Image (tube, rainbow, N blue to C red):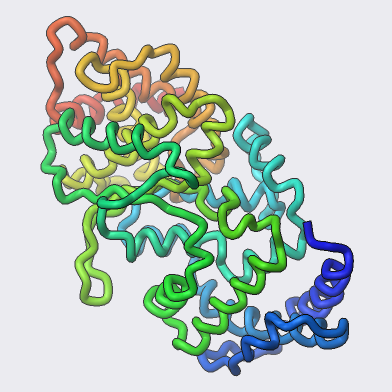
Length: 403
């Protein structure tokens, strides 16, 4: 925790910042932001100077934030062609109480996350939000981690062996061309890497190099000031898993990609699912790659929530089929079901939201259907083609979603 003397100065500084937040509508958004000299951020000075420094930092963040907040995270993901779980970031926001309450009830996972956030204050929450620290690791992985080699999974690499083995097995199991799919990790410690932050701010958010450098220096200062950030290793910063279809970004071809966040895996391991969580989450994201390859993501329906639900329920079914198939992960259905009951309760109760994944009951129904197909193939060991599986799922979908 921050020592009392420093905490007092931080609180004084935050009062100045809060005043500017409340009056920020009077500030004109600007791409050109006066630089803050690094020595203003890192040198120990008297209390009056500290207040001035935080005021400068607050003005920098507010004036830049209108540019950073131009569009929702869900819209950004869709614009990149990423099939993500937008509810994952919302879980963090609800735990930190920076969004309105959700109809979703507490779960074992959210209770774990609340405990992880017990030392966060309104000060640390607001600075993390203003700098977009919550999503910088996601965008860095989306745009700049484009090679499977030398990847490790988990803060200390604790999931690496399981993830790599499962990825290799999924590529063997399903009949799609998959050598071009990149598997990469999302680590919060990139918040310590100034050049990566600058690159993300400039290339993705469109900030000037000067503004990006100032923000990167601000994050360095904040990581030193707030030990609750854990030098970027707090699960808040990497509570995500997603799949990306290849695209051209700023003249560079990005590969089809699966990204697994450290924080997301850490939470399930803390609940005792370290044996199955990496396999199940990766199997779900790999299912999205199947959908990309078969060109079956698009739906004729104009209802965005219904279209998203179809894609996600199909991915749940694909994953369950692989996990319980004798020639797949060959896991006991009881254990798979125990994990999925927790996984499917992760806060997706906004049934009209364009990113809706389906109700927990619908998602479990899709998974059970996939498991039943795998059980039917157990004796002969036949692996159904990915296309036939999708066709059968489309016919079954009305039954899966029926009340």
